[in-house]
Length: 251
Image 1 (cartoon, helix red, strand yellow):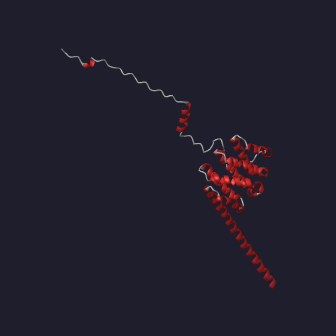
Image 2 (spheres, rainbow, N blue to C red):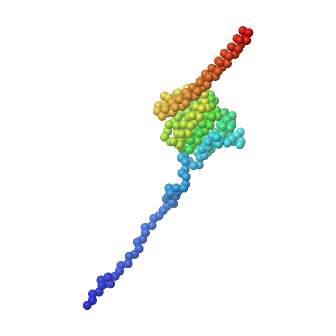
């Protein structure tokens, strides 16, 4: 008797396809993935993207400065930080193109700028630092006057503090503003202002003050070299004139 094949004796088991686990992706995850995986999209700059950091050379004049100056301080004291940034940019425009209108309220403006520098929002802090640079360029030695001197001292302290902090975004701008301050003012009175911060309790502030003082000294040395050359030139001219006069007198 022939044996039956065992392959035909057992029933063939049919494997059912395994169900794939469903993954629920939330809207927030989709947006995050798009941000992470979008390699063609340029990264946003540090700070808030809604703020424009306009270089001084691209600042434009104000169309109606006489009417707009009345609301400047109010805008700087606004509770909306974006409105403060816009007012700070207007302050820069007034400083560069309408400085005569800004001068009567300059002390108040400097105090508000100091307050903005203390704000933890980096975008607001950087905009206020840029405004300080344009004020230095526009007013120069007028900041040494008694009506502005105290507010100016507070601005210097905040600039030294911001230049010594770890945020590169703000630190570099503060360094540029301190250089603009030295370039825009008579070095000797500024030297006396900065000298007080060499004894500050914060070591980083002392270091930044020393750097600014060295720039003042370099500027003074350059000034005295030019002055000495002018004196030497004038003395040569005087000696030549005396020599000519003596010859004519002898003849």
